[in-house]
Each structure stands twice: as structure tokens, then as C-alpha cells.
Length: 214
Image (cartoon, rainbow, N blue to C red):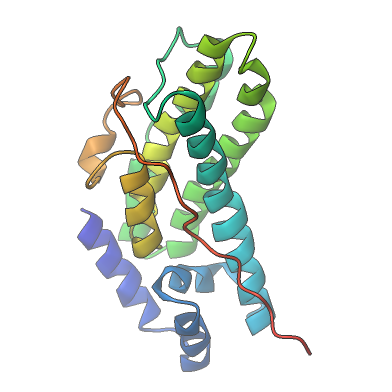
């Protein structure tokens, strides 16, 4: 399924103006999908989108959560407690996400597919900020681990479903979660990670692009 979605993205890119494509390629293969997010295309807009979507929204999210979990839970996936109402409301956004992305890609609506995924990226960021797991590190480590685990469950969906758009980066995100690979067929369950499974210390995946001084 991943290859099918990736092929549809490549088919869509083939119809882009050559100038846009050349600028995107200069940013690496993981920047190509960002062409669909630049309504008024320019190199500055493209760099801004890359930094916002990849470095800030997605990369910083994974880095903060996984680094904190690795440091404070001995490099192992923390245990999940009883899901709260807030947890369930948050995770509900990921139920059916894969189907929505596939439906958009089947109609070559790449921008809508990306919007579906990034809406959930932003929801994960909001959940992290609202639940602030770091404040429970000492007083309630179990709650701290639970919040991190809920976030890591959402990461499985984000890493898998960004593969057609940012293949190199998504592969690294998948491995950071302790998987060798992920496919849409692996997204049937909202809760699927293995408590206590070791995962490697994460490293930054998406570097910010520096705009040229004018």
C-alpha cells in the first residue's frame, strides 16, 4: 500500500512546473510534498514550509517526546495506564486516519492527504503541551510514562502515513519507535506498542533550512 501511495505522489509531481520541481529537489526528496502546501510558490515560502512542517511540527515533536522517554524510562517504552477521557478523545482522531489518507491519494488530492496527516501532527503537539508529561517526572512517574506512551502510539500513525511524502525522514522516525518497517496494515489497532521494549536514543531527523541572506 505504501508503494501505491508513493507512486500516486510521484505521478502528481510529474505535472508540476519545472521551476517548482527544481527548487524542491534542492531541498531533498523529503521536501517534494511541500510543493502542494505553497499556494504562492517562492523559494522563501518553500523554506518556511519546510521549517514549519518538518523541523518544527513533526521533527521537534518526535525529538522532545522520544528523548524525554528514553532518558527517564531507561530507553524502554513506558507502560500505559487506564485511558482518560482526554486520551480517548485524542486517539479517536487517529481511528480511520489511514482510510482518509488513502481515499485522498486515490483521487490524487495530495494536499488534502497531507492536511489530514498534519492535522493529527498538530493535535499530537497540542496533547503534549496540554498534558505536559515532564511536570509529572518526579511526583507521578507512572502518569508521566502513560502520557508519553499515548503520544508514542500516535507517532506510529504519523511515521507510517508520512512515508509517501517524506520517505527518508519517515523511515528514520519508524526506526526510532523500534520498528523495522510500518505499513498501513499495521495501523488496525490504536494501541499496539510493546511495553518495556527497548528503543534507540533518538537523533534529529529534519534540519532547519537557512534562508540565504539578501
